[in-house]
Image 1 (spheres, helix red, strand yellow):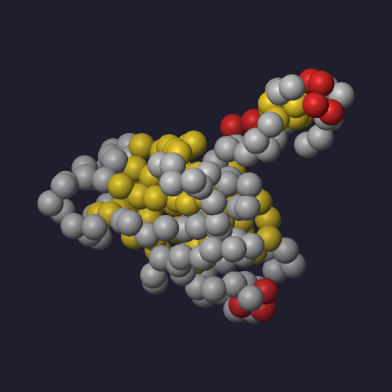
Image 2 (image 1 turned 180 degrees about the horizontal axis):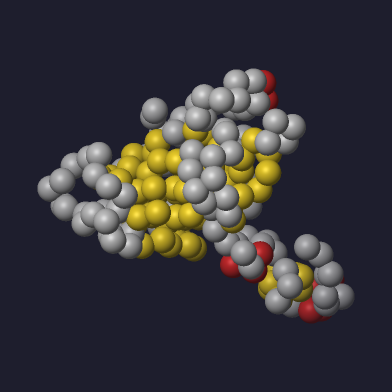
Amino acid sequence: GQGRHRRGPRMAELRLSDGHDRGGAESHGRDAAGVVGLGDDLSPGAYSMRLDLAGFGLYADFGGGARLQQYWRREAMQEKAVVRPDGGPVYAQVSVNGFLGMYQNGSPPLDVLSFDSFQRRTGTRILRLEPDGNLKAYYWNVTRWVPDFKAILDPCELPAACGQMGLCQPGGTCRCLDSTADGGDTGSK
């Protein structure tokens, strides 16, 4: 498969099927992808997932010509294989066994980011970079997409959890930085 580059309101996603559930993902308008390569950009707009030789990260583009801001990072553990700078391209692939694997040139995995259903074949899986910037995995259970992984558990760690003028507090509640601007605590989120 090829990495997909998308902009706009659609979600970016990786999808992989084990071939046993024809009709689930396809009937819901999902594009087949499966693999993201070094330099590929999985972007639903302001957010992107990027691979490098050391691992992969999630980035925010706040515009204005500023550099991309990394807000989440996963370093490759390199337990079964070691990254070789001259060893060819690095890529990530969603496995039917419930993980996102990072590989180099057909090597054993450089890293395995396990999902909740790790080592269970559940059928079609997708990995999506959501509009809020979180990376999430789902599997299809014949009737709906079941959440299987979330990279960022605390909503306050998302890059724009409370907007430009908000302050995220524990539990994901938002408050204005200037309490006189709108009466203090917004109670939103």
